[in-house]
View 1 (cartoon, rainbow, N blue to C red):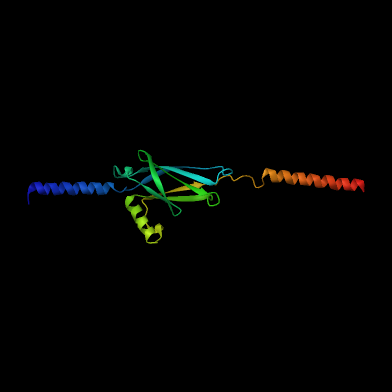
View 2: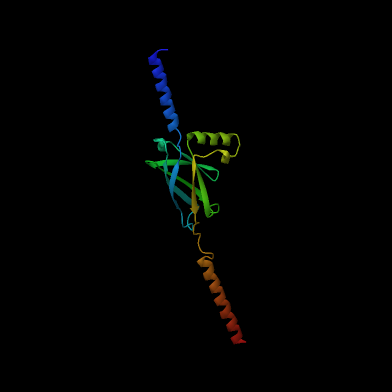
Length: 172
């Protein structure tokens, strides 16, 4: 075989190996911060925003597109800087309970497996995620147990009852 051809094949294999190695994040390390709606008295949905940094042991893998799954729903992940990402979603107030939420992150290859599992009607939890982020939602203020209008009407009714019952006793 021609030495130039061997060299070309070796170079092609090396380039293909480096592309394959950079197509997935090895040993991911995630640091996250979390924000959510804290007052739910005038909104119909709770907004959740998680911002995180991703560090990989293989260089360049942090720039790959990512996808997220939260509670069975898929959400886009947006890159907002070098190795910095953000994912956000909304929940109805009745469904947004306080507690821990797990955000599973997928690269392109594992996200394709998630979509394939969805099409086949299989459980997407069986697909191995690249990594996951766990957040703790303390809950949102939904207002007082008794609205001030109802409390005021109750106090007025009580005062009126006491006044009329006292008046009846005095006139009798």
